Length: 142
Ligand code: HEM
Image (cartoon, rainbow, N blue to C red; front, side, top):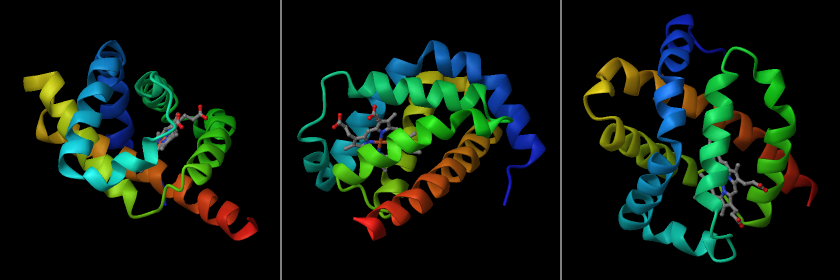
């Protein structure tokens, strides 16, 4: 499966606005995640205080490289390794996804049109599928 050109175009067009607001978006994302899915809170027990900055960095890098995903392979390896030590499971991805999209809506306001949200939704779940597949391999090896 690959991302549609329309999605790539929209993500690229909105990447600067998301990058500019990345920390606000991820801070809001965690507020939504922990309020709506409190069961995810324990996964972050050992998380550093700057976890939201790492996630913001990952989202920004992803948006910038949406048409060149090979550039992200090292980052994917690191994320997958960290995720399996934190016991992140496939079922957690929709929780983070819906929280992230809600946060993008809250922070970008009117700029987050339905087309923008749909493009980011497709892009998020595309990356989620890559991480889930790699994490499945790592869990099987462990
Ligand atoms: C596409 C989706 C996701 C992206 C881009 C992402 C990105 C990241 C990044 C960049 C890190 C830091 C890695 C490192 O520096 O070692 C990280 C760590 C982490 N992520 Fe994710 N993540 C995603 C999904 C999830 C999901 C679904 C969960 C579960 C609710 C989750 C929970 C965690 C936890 C618990 C850590 C470790 C935090 C710490 O111990 O400091 N992530 N993630």
